[in-house]
Length: 238
Figure 1 (tube, rainbow, N blue to C red):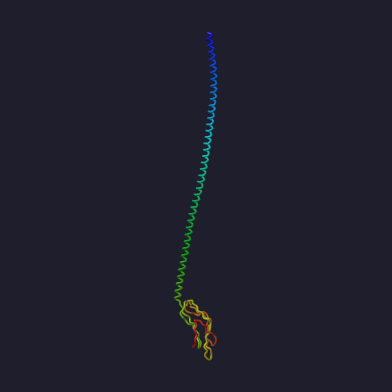
Figure 2 (cartoon, rainbow, N blue to C red; figure 1 turned 180 degrees about the vertical axis):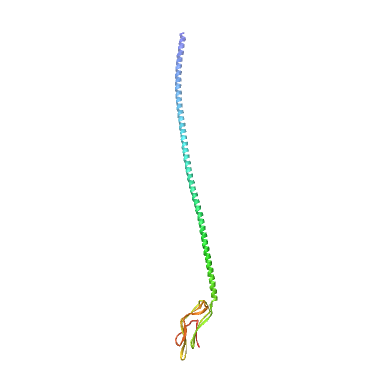
């Protein structure tokens, strides 16, 4: 009985020891598990924190990219609007220039037409003047051809001398001048002289004949004077 009791006590003691050992082991295992769990939780928290940070950074980058894209879009829209405004101004200037060019062309054509009309009037007037001058010249030529002075001799004489002023056939308006002089023929008991002053003869367009327009002549008994050398003068005795 005692033996059984001892055995029982030993068994109980061993059980207690084993239980105690098991508890310690279990406690140690639990401590290890707890540490591992904490470490794992810490790792999980760290991982979650990293992921949250990465997600936050990703969102920040996306936000920055979106803001940058919106900025680029606004700048592009502003550039396009500026270009459109510039093109609109250029188009307006081109239209204004085209209108101005068109008006200038119309004005040039109007001025050209006015100038053509003016030149045409001038040309017509010039032709009229030429025709009038031609008719006048033709009339003058006909009148000139119709009015010619025939040859004519003017004569002065004394008892024994004479002088002739011989005008040739000529056109109207011609003028012949003879310098004054004298011619004498002495016949006893006196001189027989003819004289003349400076003479001017003209082919009168009205009478179509030679007329004396200046000077005079006559005969006397003086004995001095020279006849000169005019081709239209002839002297002689009788």
